Every structure is written in C-alpha cells, then in structure tokens.
Figure (tube, rainbow, N blue to C red):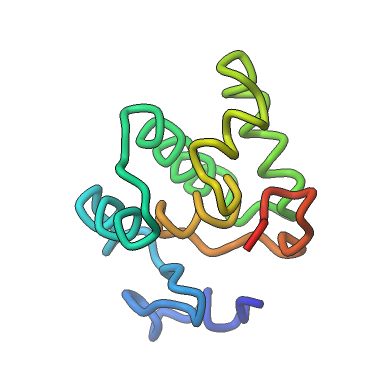
Length: 121
C-alpha cells in the first residue's frame, strides 16, 4: 500500500512507489503512458487515452479517491454508455482502476486490492 507520508512529501517528487505508480503528476507524459502500456501488452487507442485523461483529471480535481470502488464508480458513470464495466476490463485486462492508474501515472486508491473494485492482478 502507498505510504501517504511519502505521497505528500516534496522530497519524493518524480519517484515511483513499489508498484510503479508515480508520486507526482508532473513527470508523467503520454509517451510514458504508451511505454508503460506496451510493457503490459496494451497498445493505447483513443479510448484508452480518453480513460487515462479522465483518471488524471479526476485525480487533479479530487486527489486520491477514497477507495477503488469510488474510482470505479466514477469510471462507470463516465464510460458506462460505451459498454460499462465489461468494456473497461476489456481495455484494461488487469483492472481499469489498478492498471489504468498505473498507466496514468497515478497512485492506487486505498482498498483497491479487491477484485470487485477493478483490480485483478
């Protein structure tokens, strides 16, 4: 689990947590997202990029979601018309929350290790 003290510490800017998620929004780029996705066997499409942008905007506006369930619900509300949770899992086979956050360069929300919350690794 991500240590919140490391997250808020300015000394960790640009570092990764043990799961490969960035501590800071600044060092991330779409090129980094494409490289991370490629390592996970995903070729980013426009749909992937839209979801990744949504995750980053959500994080910038609200900070870390209180739980994986809250973030998954936000994804379902925004992208439900495109096929719902099933479609999100087709795009991010290891979970739209866990894999999506990793590719988006974001820390995982707490309590997101339950398979029902978009984490299947």
